[in-house]
Length: 441
Image (cartoon, rainbow, N blue to C red; front, side):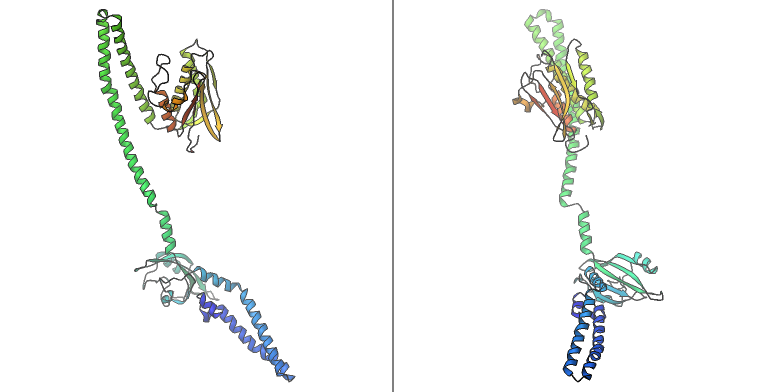
């Protein structure tokens, strides 16, 4: 047992197991002769020896059984396993006993603390403020950080509870110390951002700066488009009209037709510039997130389309209670372009039909606008959302070719995507989603 105590760092001469063993041997010295006396009185030395040996075995077995189940021994072993060292000090707070634990390392030999204060890992080091407060009140203290300088920077934490005699007198402290250097370093490492995160933040800051520069350049471009490019267009349009009005009588029909085409082309160019500027303003603004009733917007847009051509009969099939989260102005622009295209491209069928609804695809809501109009060839679908891309001539179906590009940019700003399905002469269906990145719909 003494060798075992040394193994766990317990003081062998003062250990509980050692004291119990001494008591066992003392009891053996008393019991063995008392057991052997009756046998010796009967004249049998061999019997006396056997009886004494048997008594010794019984006593040792009982003591070993008692020590094996003693909870105090288990508690002392657990204390040695959880601490670098256990210490005890007197009423003057001078350390009188130090027992090494199983966690003790080579960085510091705690036996040098005998005669010092428990916190004086560094000679004559002052007590931390919290420790002074607790010891002055004769109160327990826990996990007080104590530093060890030099080449090997270590941090120990000190815990202790007061000792009181039977008559209530303060008799010092007993406690443990643990090396917390590794734990504190791990906590700091966990709290500090990793190098990859720092690099990503730097890249994000650089991209943000580039984006701000791009936005400024876009504003400058918009200003140039709005003013500088319109000036020559106004000149072309103005002089073409002057020639047409003042010298039209001197031209033949073909000359007048050429001038009219010049004027019409200038007007289309001017309309395209207006569309580009509108697209830039719409898609560069910040989203004002709110609850948007798409069903209500669809009904309002259907009424507006009917009012454009009261003599036309179109069947609108609009789903109810489709409410999302997003920017009302931008989402209205999405439906305005999609439903406007459906209205426009279904104008030449006998019974035009425009549908707005939604369906569930694997737990995700997909919104759709469908018509039974002209349709288009899916081989060219990848070009559909580009600027000024048209599948039909302007004489057949008027437009600037910017509407679907606007829709795509707005849908992307709302965390979604848009795609289409169509066949020539069998109508088209446009599908779009919102907040596919997991934000609330």
